[in-house]
Length: 125
Image (cartoon, rainbow, N blue to C red; front, top):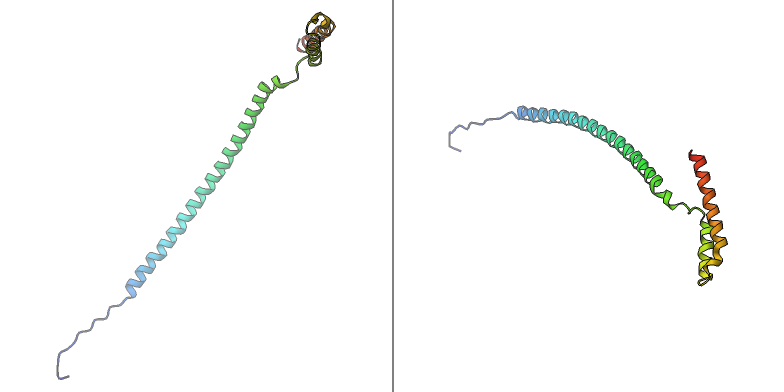
């Protein structure tokens, strides 16, 4: 203790650094809120656009299905005079060597076809 040196003590005031970091933090929170709001709006816009595109896609798909059904399911309709056609086939199977015996079935089939053709010309003409 006999030493007579003087010590110099410096006290730094941390208030300045605290308030600077606090202001940066507050500013970044404000920026964050602004960015969050901006991106929330962009997300909402994209979701609305997606919903519209989805709706358009679904309706286009449905129209495409309808067109394909009209085009190709017509072929799946029962054949014209199908019952008479089956009678001819059965008669030919039963009378393998005497197909002339099936003339009556063939006449019925031809009459049915003639009637169908006449009904088609009346409705389409």
